[in-house]
Image 1: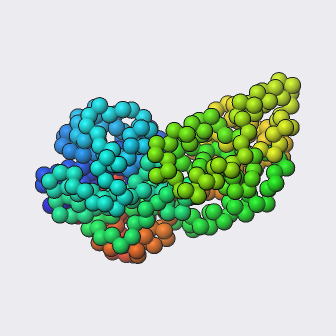
Image 2 (image 1 turned 90 degrees about the vertical axis):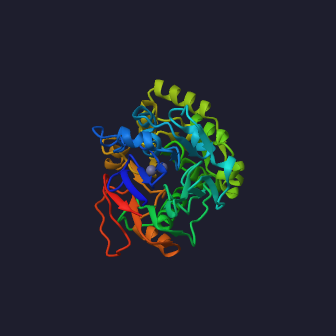
Image 3 (image 1 turned 135 degrees about the vertical axis):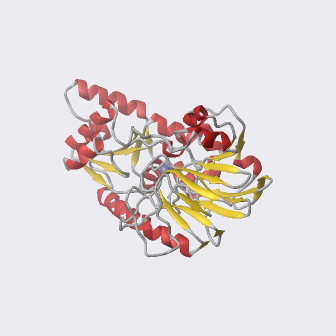
Length: 389
Ligand SMILES: [Zn+2]
Ligand SMILES: [Zn+2]
């Protein structure tokens, strides 16, 4: 018999982790850490469970999927780690045990045997560089994990999940009952930008690492907006392992025409005006500035946000803000706008994906809301629950 144990990530946000056990083989998909509840940051995995795990499949590098790797090793995990080469490269801690990079064994949609009783198919999930979905056939049962999944990114390529059979599918539903889908979000952000371009006043985009920053870069390139990129974002783009594989060709093309200003020049001009008692350098009034600091934690980026607001410019937030963050404070004070860039699915998008596949049972994950569904095949599970596959 094959069972799915939710070690974390259902009816909560963070510590995503799913244990699938058969008679002979045990696999874990993701090992995340939850930031918002420091008293229980790790998945509910006992040392006995950790020692039994033969394979750990990671969907992508974000902390809510990988942040418990070290903890898992401390519990006794010593199995094989499987992930894309990009995910392995971005891991917060290196894994000393055996690892398999997906590109060394397979390619999108191609089924391969991992060991006796375990087959794997993967595809790119459109969420960030290195992000994948998995379909695992374990001891005769098929379990699909979408990982964090987005089909409409402007930057990341997605191998759409279509016509696939699964006895059970764990599907991204992070945006839950939110009404707007990815399409509506793009429309809102694009028309807001169109109203501001050509820029009279500066814009600030605080973005996370490995995510929406690239989408924003594409929007700015298409509108010929002069862009100041944080050094870490430039590195992220240049270092993207095998980037032609993960990024859309149209995005890579757009990056060639991105009008860039040197971040070093911007920073020194900014320091100078601060010393002179001014708020923002006049020579950069027509620029969009991207900093890799989505919540505006760093003092230097907060100064830029304050300067941008003082010049009549806007800070544009594209993802959720932590309640106590400076980003949220700006929004509350009317100095920032929030236009979401979708990197997950809402309920409607999850159901559309179900309609295009043959999933016998569906477990929504990544949503902190308490969801309920009339459909019998959708199982709303909590962390700690087990489902028979
Ligand atoms: Zn993610
Ligand atoms: Zn996630």
